[in-house]
Length: 506
Image (cartoon, rainbow, N blue to C red):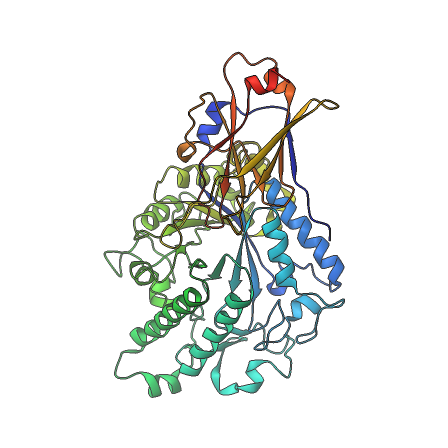
């Protein structure tokens, strides 16, 4: 596939006021679910070339909508959307678990390359404990781990799970994640909310054997939490051993604990919670810096009777312990009830999280929801909330090294009256995320607090172009600057590209 030459030709400018109104740093992503073909690939699409085109279309859609990252499910049920020596090919990729794609390709490698080509981050989403999605209906290959080590698994409802209390399971999961981080240029490992499964009324999770063997006198609830704590700290170590700059994020259910169970909990009345039912002590992981970001799934509306959005937003923002917090937003709920038929519901949620300085962005569930433009929300993102690009917030505890200033060669094309700058990385930088372009009315520009005008993804032939007519009717001074953005999202010092004198003297 030919390298994508990205050229931006801009005919109009955004006002300085709009540029200031848009955050410079904001994580903007969509979950792309593969389990049961929710988002990709579409049901019945088992042709590799068609899958590639479909994924490119999805990426281009999210790029248009202003996203700077995608969170893609690559391991939904102890299976793989990549060649693995541990787990078989996913049935949702090829129609039959264990069957390779035809024509053969590596979907994960393809998705990473296409995502990075657009200057976006790729977060590899894995489900830690689910092994058989639906017993009796799921395709199970002879090489699936449930057939090799049936003693590692427990059946609860119509799903088969890894036993979180089994030490062999913990070691196996570490090996699987280590393999992904070691072989692929991912930006993050992302786990969802399925730790111990959500409770089924009248049924207890059947982990008596493991509890008897490993309980060591602890009560069952604390023992279960310790099992999940163990896998989180182990995975944190494995990820950083293989790639110190790789992020580790968790997207838990929206409620840690209700206040009636714990004075530190949120003022909510949820039927199930992370701590008491899923045995996921998220706050411990944040306090101990085992994870780099948390994305609570706040799929609730303002005024929800048991879990109001604003109450939970405020609570999570006060319990990040210096790690980054992105809010999970439920675009899929559009039309669900009167609150979600209100066109202002999602915009108000975005405005509220932006008003909170302890929140650094958002992830939308899920990708397919964008295709129908529910309640006009895609239009709202494109024309208002995400009208200007944003950089992914740096995590300086992982990497605080700034990129070097880029090399820019400008020229004027007489045929179409276009000013163009060819952008190249400094030879001292191995790789870049891309180039951030800024518009200023002052020559002594500081990029650290300015809003972006445009973002140009890194490529060997990256260019930023501007119609000369932009300057023809400008009364004040205008200066275009560019910075290099490293893979850690840290920027270089700015370099001047064009100014009024550039536009008028050619």
